[in-house]
Image 1: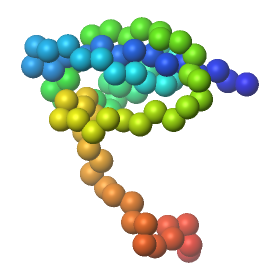
Image 2: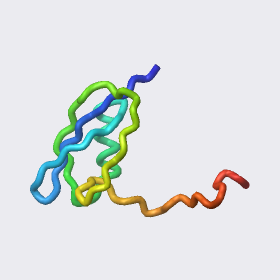
Image 3: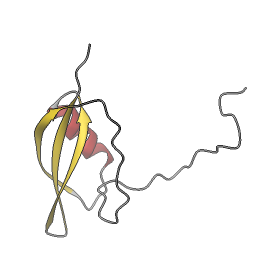
Length: 84
């Protein structure tokens, strides 16, 4: 069984520090995911282990200070995408 962990992500925007948590298998994976998906005006400061992932569902807060860009494409729920 693969154990996933929660990592604390410290990041900076316009001189202010922020904190978010991200589930991942390793510290390197958490950092790589954040760097690959962050906005261009965000700087990663530090990644630290918080603890094991309890298996609960974490929802991303909708905030103007979110480090990730909003999704460009939206899924259509009125059609079955798998039906071909």
